Image 1 (cartoon, rainbow, N blue to C red):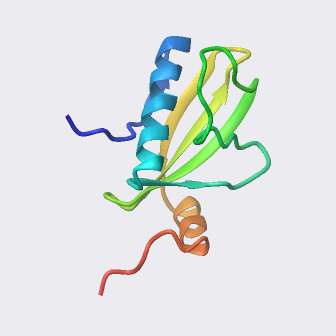
Image 2: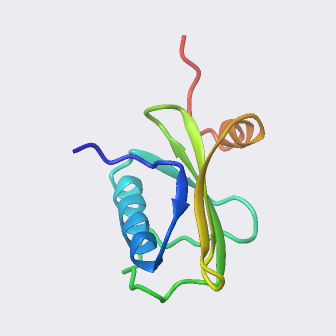
Amino acid sequence: MELKIKPGKIRDPKELLQVLKKIKYLVLNGEVQFVPYGSEYWDFHQEMIIEGQWPDFFSNSYYDKRDQAVYNLICNTYQGNCRIKKEGGKENWIARLFGLFTKKT
């Protein structure tokens, strides 16, 4: 089974916990790159993740090296609104700025 970040709504705390663990695995194995961008990110990648012990709001960006795309994990855990969006344009420019992928020649 291939692990991959997938766009979509995260429906409940258990699903959020699964998504966080999957992203943590992908980051630690070098398959995606965490982009600490903006003031609302949460760098949980070296932490033990326990259900419910997360910030009320966080917005993380990830560069997927396999499909050369940027994904945003946007979570308002207080109100139960979390989702993953696949980005283009500006976010890909941000990834280039951070040097997270190289141009194919």
